[in-house]
Image (cartoon, rainbow, N blue to C red; front, side, top):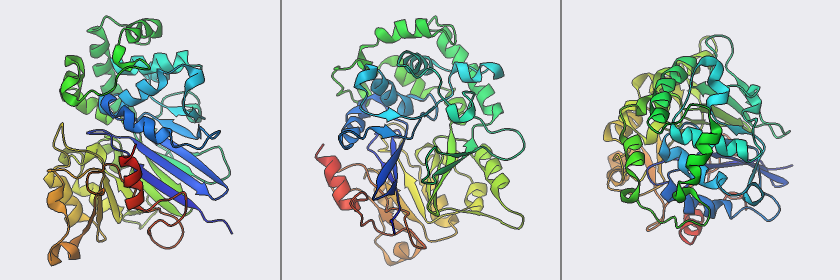
Length: 398
């Protein structure tokens, strides 16, 4: 009998997100990549992609959740490679660009135009195939979109965000952003011409930039007043495989996510039971509510951030998880930083209330144990599913 596995790797994406999912069994490994982090995290993403077995570059799905630079730049850098030199082969791409949301009169920002131009030029003109090449959006009524990936292995993704209202709000930011760069929304030829002049995205460019080296425009986008509109447009979903599940929340707004979760609950069911939650917006207090904690019954909570931009995770968010979780929570951090090491369990009281997991000393990136077989998440043992210590050591060496 085959032994299924389902792993989530939080790559070291600095203050952003880059999540590598693998699932399947000993016969075949299937993969999903969610976001690519900011540009200066590209070498770590490239190193992880470089671990793919020779002749097996297929990934079932590439998800670009929204256009904030700490999620999208690594993907722009990846797709800037000539099509024949892509180190992976996505079967589908989920991304809300102009052509998908034009009918709703929703547009997007400059980096969104760059990505749309790249996907178009790299012979992937028709993305969002699972949604009929339209916007990835939660309908106002009826069942939530439930996508079974096109294989027999049973990975099912249920869309939780965005809704139409969030995409409409994002449209205002997008139009404002592209106007200052003298771009017309959806003019992919003009976007391509500007992208050609952005040397930092070029293949072969030296990618050792730190946060202090980002251009003024990128810094403005990271700190901009319109950030909440971009966050609200995030693609968030529930992933289920082999009887196990994880919520991937990007930077989504809790009001939208909670409304979708309520639509998933059966009559008399007061909470959605899942194995793990990748928390929204890197553990921001503005993206975690008491309502969400009441609606979700989970054991593992994942935080992706090194804290160097916005000091995430926020103390209030971590406390909300510790005190609001229905089960004793385990907190997973893909960096050890001044903003999260205070939570390291050690005292008797802390150990009774929660558990913590960090990368090995000097390392970054972490893989929570696989939600495979059995009644709970257990330590990984299969060759495809390395224990935490060996995984972070391998990341450190790349």
